[in-house]
Image (cartoon, each protein chain N blue to C red):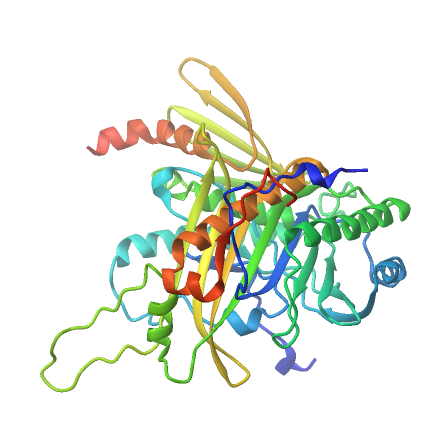
Length: 292
Length: 177
């Protein structure tokens, strides 16, 4: 049994009383489980019921993706393989209240927590990580029971999806400027006829997470997109930590995911404006490490 | 056969310098609606871009061939190729493209054990990269004049493979200069 309390939250890591966080996903990707069939989803559903995942839905599979690294000057080139095994779906196993979700496909396992229609309080990673661990262990045991090839994890991922509402009085541009420190309006002072009104903006950036000896360990992808949720104007702001993983499903993996949390939180902290920090109640809770 | 239902095959999507986001969200469609390219009418950097596109197109076609191999493709009952391995090989090639572009296009060969072999040859060097599975890559780099062989294993960092490609292409680059 793992002692998850060993995963310490850095004492200087900020927290927000009212974060705009809408969804968190912890994901592992593994080599295709050869021999995984539709019937296994039904058997797995029985096992996941003990966690309260009683609802299920079929979804299109997520394409595999990999973070790889080359020369520093090369920049990111992504090459996405689209031909996934469409004969097997990805299946959602949802809790009754729809806040918690397990997603399974032959090369991926994902655990999500999310708000439902804007309601719900993020239980923080110290709750989500053990829940991921528990459900993942059930899946791993199921794979062993079914005498399928063992899970060979090749990548893990932690994703934070924030939903920032744009007020009725604001343009998208105003909202970007209110929320993001890096956002600057570029306004030509004068045009011959008319003027340019800022309309909507998006931005995306990536960061390589390197160890102190310069070894690349993971990438963090940050992306903000002007969008709509039903009829409400929002900025969707996602932060994704994704890195290769060649080890087992063990304490080291959880520590790597917790490292991803730190990278995401520190990046979020540096990208967001003082006003947004004040609105969302930024604070630093000094502790002796604490739980994750 | 109802030809209306036949879709052209599009095995790969190439995103040059793109930023692929996590798609594990339950609400992906709500927040990832942006497209990377607003317009394709620009001629900026056309030559480099075309050269790169050609190279990537060849990679796509070759890997799609491997992806399409059926069970027993080699006559000895070998399995189909794992899509994760094919995809990982694509990512490796994309990562070393700039170093590899000075060399002839590599041989990309399926192997009976499920690995994908990528071989570059120059007048001075031979570089053999075996993608066994994601994060499991064996590399053999040989200097032909001396017979000196360097063997190493790579996981997700392909910096050394890129350097080996640069070494292989160095005489050709020097001749051009």
